[in-house]
Image (tube, rainbow, N blue to C red; front, side, top):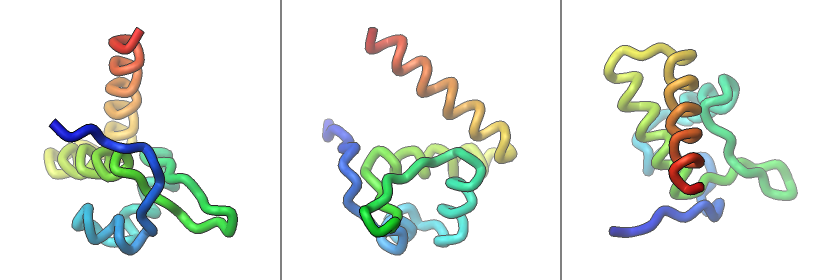
Amino acid sequence: MMQRSNVPLYGIAVAATLAELPIATLRLYEAKGVLRPSRSGGGTRRYSDEDLARLARASALRDRGVNMAGIKIILELEDEIARLKAR
């Protein structure tokens, strides 16, 4: 199994293409706190493989009818579970 990297590699256009989402959706997820991409020194958004996996999870939840607030809560709870498991 390939491990996901948290190294910010992709600009927003590439990330949107890889995630098969409009750029506006990535910006919306960031504005709502669902996603927190890294920023370059010049302020350009940079996305990692972990960010792309989070986008895929958010999209899957949205496809199932979960609203933005619900997506944020679910992803935060999943993050907390992962942190607790790591301990």
